[in-house]
Length: 145
Image (tube, rainbow, N blue to C red):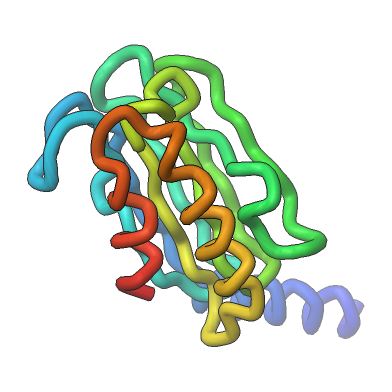
C-alpha cells in the first residue's frame, strides 16, 4: 500500500512540472499568411503542445528526418486539433501538409540539448527550393533557437 501511495505521489509531482502550450493553425497571423502561431517554441521534456485548428483546412505533421532520433512522428487530420507530448529532447520541425509549399512550418526545441539542430538546419536549407513563398521562413525560425 505504501509503494502504491508513493508511486501516486511521484506521478502527481511529475505532472505538476509539465506544461501545456497552444499553437494555432492560421490563415493569417502576425507574421503573415499560412502560419502557426507561435511558430517557434522552447519547451521542456514531457510538455504537451496542443495544435488548434483555428482556421479550417490545416493540419500539423512532423517532418521526416527533422525530429530527434527515437522521437514519435505525428500527423493530424485536416481541420482537427491534435495534442503532442514531447518525450525526447531535441529539435522538431513540422508543417501543415496542404500548405507546405507556402512554408507553413514551425519548430519546437525540447530541452536544453538540441543535439539534432545541425541536421534539422541542413534539411531546412534543402527544403527552400520546394517553397513557392516564404523561402527563408523555416531557416529563420531555426535561427531563433
